[in-house]
Length: 254
Image 1 (cartoon, rainbow, N blue to C red):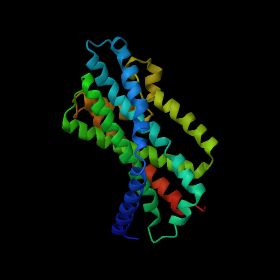
Image 2 (image 1 turned 135 degrees about the vertical axis):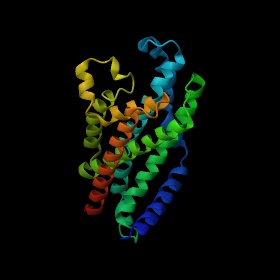
Image 3 (image 1 turned 90 degrees about the vertical axis):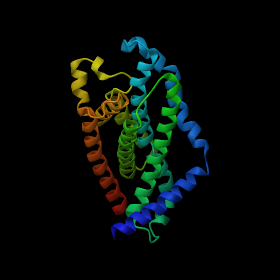
Image 4 (image 1 turned 30 degrees about the horizontal axis):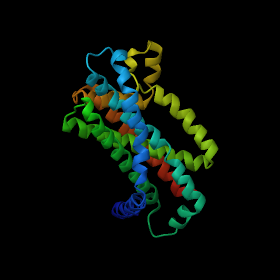
């Protein structure tokens, strides 16, 4: 299997998955409903909690964390869609086509990453009236980070789905793993406000580094160490996650 064939087959699968998703545009409204609610109902409480002078400063701190949370939560739960396709026999029928087996997974993962980025763009635009401002270069790096983060969480979700293959167990795994990871990422409030032991525990959480990187980019500090540390950590973990999920998918017996 050549790289050209893999890229071609992945592109074909991505196009098919995007077409299927666009036939049901209602997904976008439901996908952004909860983040918008947090943006409107939770962020106004942060000014006093963060001890900042303006509400815009509070949103400037909160929105990067909210974008990270969207990628984490929605990315992890994409496995339920794969599970439904496994149960209905869609994956089994696709595996007998001439398409390269890794492309069946990669095409789906790219569709999910695009979906997550669309949500991130909508949330960013919704935050502009609240005073959030970020340079185009910094925003491009932030979206690159979110894309790699999404690829990582989606690939992990697919790999765990192929290991578990049961809705109830899968939901428990995602909630058990996702909740502490989410809380230790500092998405709601910066962990600089937390006690020392909690900050030390967060050091092993890649989403904590990603959140710090996002906040530094939204603050215009694209050369700061947290930016490149977060990008490097997430890039390595994304590669490992994709490799794991693709190998599981190619070798699995349905």
